[in-house]
Length: 121
Image 1 (cartoon, rainbow, N blue to C red):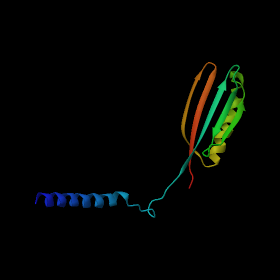
Image 2: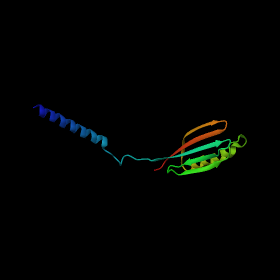
Image 3: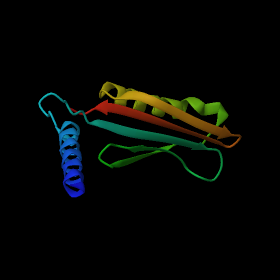
Image 4: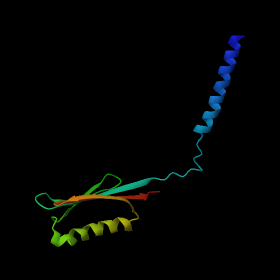
């Protein structure tokens, strides 16, 4: 009798588990739209001194684009700013949205990272 009781409880628990898991694993693919998002990272590094300044762009497919910038010079800051401005506007015009910016600087160095995203459906 004890054995039949144990088997009945085990079968009941198994039925409950199977029923509950069917709710969890049921996929309604017709109702769910999948959206894929692409990210682009742009990092500008402006250096005063011997090291070269540059702007590196990494696209969502892993392609890397490098553009040289002028050396950091307080008297001609607008030269690099115009180049950076043009790249940011280019990405905006392609439908990318700026989602994050971070930067840091010292007396001889300015580094800024821009992260853009775009829904790729």
